[in-house]
Image (cartoon, rainbow, N blue to C red):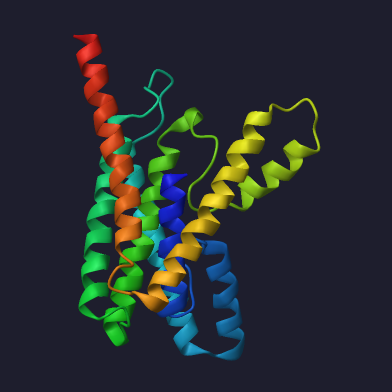
Length: 218
């Protein structure tokens, strides 16, 4: 949920200030790309290409960091935290550029920030895939989550856990987008705090958990 709040905030910023595209919703970007191609709208096409390419790069790098899931892997592997730390580094770069431009980047800077945001979201997606069978839900692309939620509601034999988790994840995305949008428009200098704090808190929680497990095993 915490990671998904950050996703909503990042997507809100890229949609409002970085060309009307998303940093994590690749299917939506591909639809926009098709629209741009059909109308020869170069600006929209360039923004969608940068967003999609950045996301793909993030997924590729994140997958290399996390490696393939293993049957005996812990609930939260160290490599997942490493991928999230790399995402944090990209969000730091994104936030720095955002603040330096007053939250209204344009030209090549806007494209660079869009690329950084998309890479960060790709890294996060790969990190969650690195959880293997322990990860029931995504924190970026959530159409499948909504589909599973509706299907689970119509199947009485299904556990109520998926229902509550699905609702919570979708609510987190919406909340993150709402908070992010308000800050982007009204307090752009403060906006980067939201995705950075969300991601940073998850990394910190993972580190604390690992430290406790280390003490218990010793």
